[in-house]
Length: 339
Image (cartoon, rainbow, N blue to C red; front, side):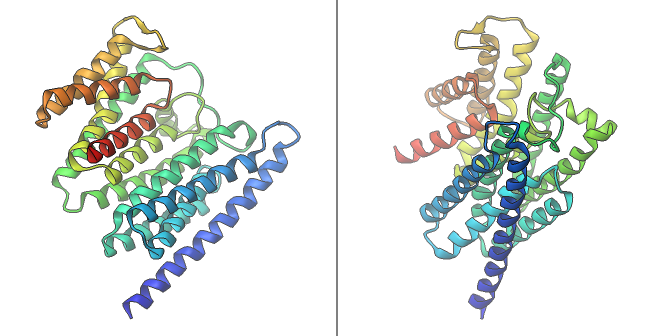
């Protein structure tokens, strides 16, 4: 009986996933037609490539970590709905809200089965790929949000990093004191995602709160991208990395990265030869902060130096910090496990 109920629930989720996938392709096709006479790019083809890439990665996760047809179907459902949600973010509030409600229901269901880890592995991957696709075709969507102004003040950047440090402290407190910390973090992530979507519609209306939060966003991206990348990076670290390395990874993206920006912008220093947007002072601050965290966690000095240096180099490259650091932390964790 229990197996039959599980099958029905999974069938329902899979059915919704197919519906969301169909809506995504239908709307992406409309956008492609509208922009085809103005752009050389092909939005439908580009977004379809990202969509199928997210499905392929979801299938790989289920095969490598779970090796079950049931979990393969569940991961594909989560991936489809998550990617579609990122597409309808800031575009259709009703569809987006329904997608988040469905994702929350899947998260609760997987928690009941004892496999919430599947959700925090698949949902962030599909969401990140969805936002990368969304940003790469931003100029092809006339109805999308305004691009964040190119000129950013030091004050705005510092405010963004202070906010990032605050979120990091909140996550660590949840991990320490909450009875089901990962589920609480997933719940807060989905609710925050929903809230950011609501605020994103007010950006165009001149809402004071929306305008204030807009100043925390990085340039030339869809409103809310930075927060989504940060949350998804944290979830992926929790989903793929062991406890000690996970804490080091969270410290890297929430504290060390923020302090690198604060120090780099506050104190004039020599720019890095391979990235003139980063400074030696900022990279040194990243290394020092992360090394201090690792020392407090009892990591051997030699390992702490190697990990801190490696992540400081990754942070200094010309990539999205949160995503590159997350991938580096996961790679380090796998390397340690294989050694």
